[in-house]
Image (tube, rainbow, N blue to C red; front, side):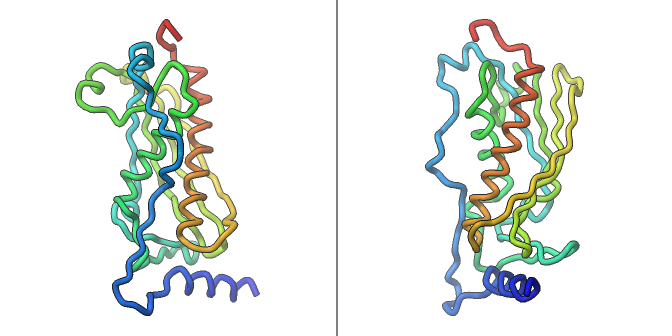
Length: 198
């Protein structure tokens, strides 16, 4: 029975539309609170530069699903609205900033990079839905100050899908990003000396 469900899920997710070329595009919800600090907050906050490394399958815009332990399948008609690496980076930045106090995460333009000595690098090694009906996210993150690594931590999250489809998978991915953001925020709160005024 489990095998039948898995086959059905793959068929449903990967099936081509009867209307050739009817592409569907997906993005993270835009209803989430925009968490970029205001100008007043920036003056009394430490900038943390966020960088992200992703596997090759997140550097192209086709949705994917893991069909067994070693195989990923690419959808031809279900696509990210923007490159997933950029979308994930933006979602992660917003999720971390939601509960940040005394610091804020930024992608880092040139001037910020020159001024800030605090870095957060996230390496995603796995991030996809599976035919078993869950979303997997795993990798590691590195927190460094003044060019010196402070903490490196592995992470691995799994969450069951409550609905079928790529839209539901993307909502679940956002939840996992929020979980990772909470883990990172707890670490920063314990280890980052915040600017006076906060």
